[in-house]
Image (cartoon, rainbow, N blue to C red; front, side, top):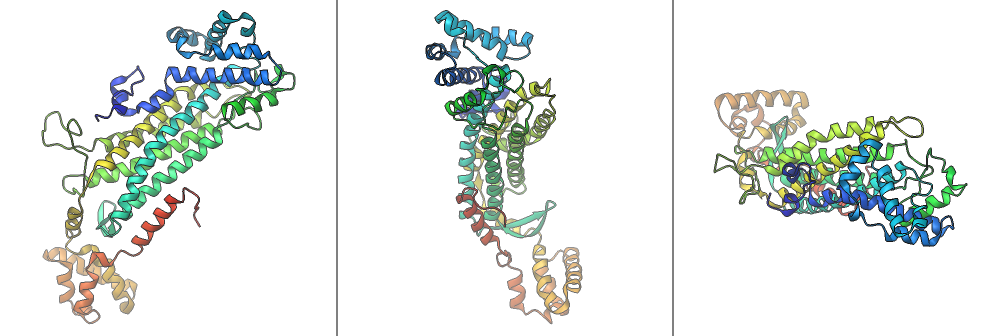
Length: 465
């Protein structure tokens, strides 16, 4: 992929692979500087909130805000100290306090006033989560827009429906696209709802009582949340991780929806099918040895992500079991897991948006594939028509017999139907012609496409009824 979003998305630890498995925007939202930036945002907002409530001097809050320069922090030194301390907040607060002390020793006394390490880390995590999901959302909206266009443009493009990987009855490419659109859109809605639910400040102090603030902790929490544009939870959520786990689960479901799209498209892109073709271009989807290859690269990434995501979600679910007022180990397990899941999700969303935008759609191949079973996919249509006279069971058995005959003789089902007296006694030649037309056996396909588009345009305000 030549897009700079992928080329420069490296986190510094695995740049060669990060180019495939994250995007620049999400990587930037989750890197070291972003973590320090959001942690400083917490400390500044806390100081300003406490100053507004006359808990600390206003001048101290101003000095704290003035010194909030994440780029001035020694990241390698913080990393080494975090390994000894058990979390990044302890050395971060010490380093930030030292930065403020160099500016004003009196103000340094009020850094992190009444808070605990988990308050700053969890709140920073929420701020990073919001930023990362907004970046993912941009690619999802791009993907949805393209899928909606395909649904509309191909509402009547007929191709074989497939069940258990075999031709079943006719469907339309528009309806397939409507299915992908619906799955991706609903997954996005669920993710947005989960993030909205989780977007609360964390502020509980040492053990969730905020005792150090002399009964004013709830006031501080409300003012802190207001300044960070976050919600105020009923109480601190130090070991109540359900909302964060719900975000992880929503990300996993989204990866599955994108994987479903990738699986279907990659199957349709097989040489023997070629109903769609992968994007082609210099350096895109080629082979190191075979000049003719045009591989579905975006689909491969999305399928890889769909394979990895469930394990990460399981880790977040397992990490919910945290001890008493502050957890040991479970909390720590979230730190790398949630960012990894966000990075992978971003890659899948971006790659599939690019794939769907640039792939070739081949209606002629779809039309040709309708004939591969020589009319057998229309057996249900004929059976249902005969059932009006013969009954469903008898008509079904008759069509089973006739389809086997057609296969054995290597002729079309149409030929066998016209030769069988049991059929011609009920159906005229024109009836048989009508029933053998795939475009005439699409049921509510068009209506489903329209309903899917309406639900998408409605923005998630329609529920199942």
